[in-house]
Image 1 (spheres, rainbow, N blue to C red):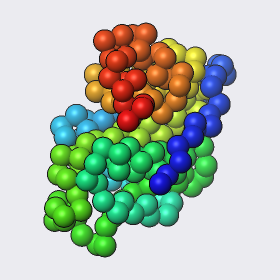
Image 2: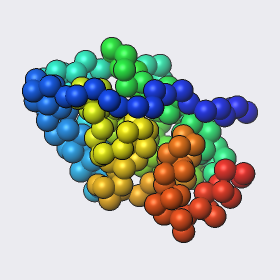
Image 3: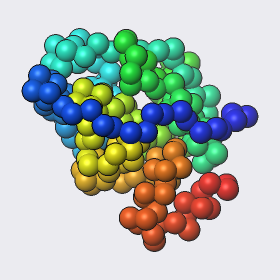
Length: 204
């Protein structure tokens, strides 16, 4: 069983953006917005391909990215398996290394939908939504790094990612908000009605 532990991060964003970094940031944010549109339309696999497109990303933003090792998800038949699978992928995603290592998933060369004995279709859809947000999150970190400033007005970079996606009106799940304690604290303060469900999620 996967042992969960806090993810390491550097919390603050303090550097003043320069003119050149702002121009680069505009390109990066445009790329992010394009990927978010795929997520908004429920085209999660397209979003993953967009955020992980090595050639397109380099041509449009100048950012070099790459894929890390394939993270194979053996099955998704319970919320516990979903929780562990998403944690693994989040742990393997890196915004600050070149090439950037993100994760993709697979199962014996077959699509998840074609293996009902191993994959619950509802959980697969939830899984793909969450993975596409993880990929978007790494790009938002790239935006923060390029400008040295927040993307949504929050000093803490993990809270800032959540604030950015929240402003874009994306649903932030318990998986997403509990990945970092301070992100969870920010979210509960903003949406106190979700606190009970989040506490239950953490103990499940």
